[in-house]
Length: 379
Image (tube, rainbow, N blue to C red; front, side):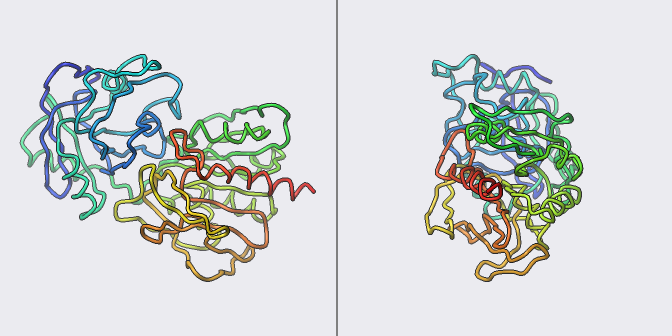
């Protein structure tokens, strides 16, 4: 259903797969929804979070207590729609206040059929997920509410994130081009695994013409663009299922074409080099994650959205079929691999989001690093 809950007190209940439940009020659409329960620590940028394709099939819990204060506008979405499968907030704004707002957040959620819940203790829910880990969840409101035994059975029947192959569900189905801003300097083939709108824009600002290709693109499709560089985007799902993109990346590495990957693209590079991937207990999601760039020693405050990580040794250089590789970035909270680079050819990746539209922008230099690789290769 897509009925707005604005001004109403429709009852709702959130049920986790381990049996814990929270009761509150419907927010957005009324009905039922399922997904993986995750939490985001961002205190701003909720519109970018909702429209990030990497959140496909996830129910996002906002740790910030007040959400919706700036309403919704038509300039900030990162893609064509809201991708989260459900939304959880504590205190939704009663009246949005921003000169750019054209409608309220709950109206937008309802219009796009996104079932949410408000009025629950999101701090308690977040602590539960930190202790127990991300897990399946269901949100039920209005006529969808039944006895909790029935609701729990529905949650347990929902698909898990581990083993989910989702990139093709969110990616473009047809290639398109984002032209360079100003003088065109380079051509880049970008494999869309769930790309955010700001990513090709950041490249276009640097004189790059970006050819965005579907997640199902082959190596022939990539090289048909005659690219100066190849980019692999962020995206949802388990990287262990992404055999197609891994094969394409290996073909790019064999040609020694400059390569840059973000988020899912970092995990694809890890697999292409022969490393494994694994599921994090509750992942990194938010806009305040400290990461150290080991090539410079600089610590950046970065935006994250990932539930999987690359299993690579932190303190040794690894031999791979494509030359030596090392971990270039690491999360200072938990030592999770946040970046990889090859030492014998122009290829690198990061696990976080340097394009972060809502900020921070500490890592925007990585696009300049990509440009430098293409300049060096051309020279």
